[in-house]
Structures are given as structure tokens and as C-alpha cells.
Image (cartoon, rainbow, N blue to C red):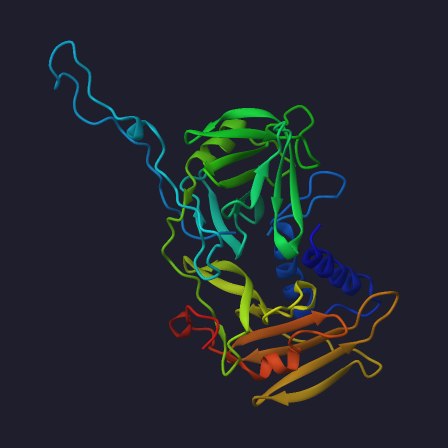
Length: 378
């Protein structure tokens, strides 16, 4: 489990275990979106799985058809087909994915399934597919040279820098996915005991790997899994993420380190972003959750909360002291800023960017998609 995942998990556990009633934004909104951050990768060994959070544009990836018509070639001869034409199109994998444009896209999903959320960070990109309100499929794509196959081909190890290491235990070869070698993952808690072929990993490019698995405890046909995987597009999305909030007048060293989005009107719209400064520890980063409607804030007792006006908006500033080995938590909850609600939170005694400071630099663009921007900073 990565340091960032552990930090967020502990934070949400702290809120859930508290005797105080949950805040509608700090728990309902922030927790659900925070879990989106945790759900996109599963540790399948001794660690319980992190459930999943959906996705972006569907881009069809059509199978190549042979050139020419039957009978159009001289008798006794067959069409000249180069070795390159027999191979899948070469995919160029970046060293780091863009945090503003999703990298992968589903080309086919079963009828009735849809894409609802996803996210991206430099080393990986994830998409989620839903059947109604139920999460069914998760796709994780890794950047160049992030993952390596062990010498015995029993596991795929993905090194994610500050975010730790993800290890996928493999149970054996799977049918090729779009012409690329593939492996079944070993059975896990979300896979039926008699059918372990509920998750597949394949090498979608020379130095890139992707993983697709069923996020449901219900049986999903292996052929459906392989068909979805075979129609995934890589580097094909051209629609950038849109942001309903934007940081202004900030140092150049401030940047987005992760971005998670939902689909609104067919467009990927950021609903949680983590901001970093140069050289910062991921465990100390604040995350900003945006809800596309007004909300409300819980006022903690015993002096932990106070009302404040920042940038002309009434907010609740929370300082939850350290307890039981947990670090202190700092939050800003804004229930209605131009028709949106905003929640900023960070754990740690020395946050890289304090939530109050972050909110002072935050420009909230309102609930109209026409006012949203494609850059989180200006």
C-alpha cells in the first residue's frame, strides 16, 4: 500500500470512527471522492482490496481488415502483406501521463454499461465502468517502464515512486489481447472461487502494461473481459479534463499531482485534485474536493471549528487535533461558492500548503460548464 493511500485511508477511518456526526461534505463528498483515490489500485496479496471509484470518452478501436477484394490478385498469388501490417499498431507510451488529458479509453462495453469516473497521476491512469450505479469494471494503465515482469513470469511489479509498489500475482498465460501477450491474475477476494479468470494483465506496448478486472463479486464472463480489454484505446483521447475551480496567483512550483474526475454531460470534470509544491512529500498534500451543487458543513464542538469569511465566502475552518497516534487534520469547508461546494483537507503537522492558504488562491468558476477551464492553475 502506498504512503498516500495509507494516509488517506487513515484519515477516512479517523472520520468514520469519530463520535461526531459526519459532515455532508467532509464525509459524504470527500470520503466518496477520497475513496475514488484509494479504489483505483488493488493490492492482491496480504492486503485487503481497495474498492473502486468512472471514466472518460469511449473511442472505438476497429479491427484491421485485409486490404483488397477476393479474386483481385493474379491466380496462384496471395496479397503481399508486410510483417508490420500483421502486427498491432505501435503505441508510444509516455514516461509520464498528462494530468489534464486522460490517456486510455474504452472502445467497447457491454450494453447498458457506461463510463462515469476516472483519474490520472503521472505514473498511471484509471477508468471505471458502471452498470447503473454499480461499479463493474476497472482499467488501470501504467506509463512507460513503470512495470516489469519477474523472471519466472509469476508476478508483475509496478514501481510508482512515492506511491509505493503494486505487485500483481499472475496465475498463467491468457489469450493474447489485441495481439499482445497477456496473463491471468491469481484469484482474489472479488473473483468467484471456480473462475479465477476475472482479471487480465497485458503488455499493450513494448514498455507499457495495463490491467482490467471485474470489480463485482458477481461472475463476469471471461470472454467479456477479453473483449473489453481488446478494444481499449491508448493515447487516443483528445478531450481534456475540465476544472470548475482554478488556482490563481500561485508560485510556479505549485502543481496538480493527481486529478480525479466524473463525467458530466459527456465531459470529464475534475471533482478531486491533489496539489503539490516542488519537493513535497505526497503524505502531506492537501486534496480539494469539488461538488457540483451547494452543500453544508458540520461544525465540530470544543473549539475545533470556527466560522470565517475568505474571499467574501462564508466557510468553516476545522482544526482536528492529533489523537491516538493520528496526526492533526486541517480543513476548509465552503458550502456554497457560486453554486458549488468545496472541501479542502490535509493531514500532518506540517502540511505543504495549508487549506486556508489554498482557498485564498482558489477561483471557483460556478456550476455552468461554459465557465469551466482546462487548466487548474492560471
